[in-house]
Length: 190
Image (tube, rainbow, N blue to C red):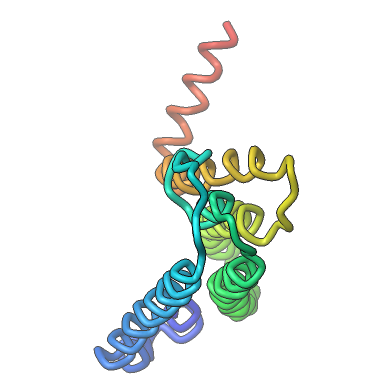
């Protein structure tokens, strides 16, 4: 809906009615609940070995599947499908809306206005790309013997590093923050 706010700002209140907001919220909850139920249903059919220590820093689906004594092929297929939908649908939607935004930005006559619009959009694209990229690397990678260590690193990245980078990414648009950062970096060089 950011495309509506930028491309058609006068229509934003009409396009983003309470009904539309409620529908978007309901759709998000429905996708999350459906994915959770699919994973839970598939987990119920598994039997687990004696080992009960998950080789991960939080209880996630893929490390939990490693504890199973039965075939996890169906579970891995469900993970791939659910995560694929949860990553591909929002990513495609975001990039389509940014295509409309980019088209509107290119029609802005002033160079300063285009620069400000690009600055606003670029920080969001960086944050979204880091989050969805590391999530895709974590869950859409085929499993292999050495991939669990890479997945641990990727999960730390998308659960901890990306949220910590968000304030930095978004605050670098602020002129005062940029000036303070340049000053701090130049004083370190001396």
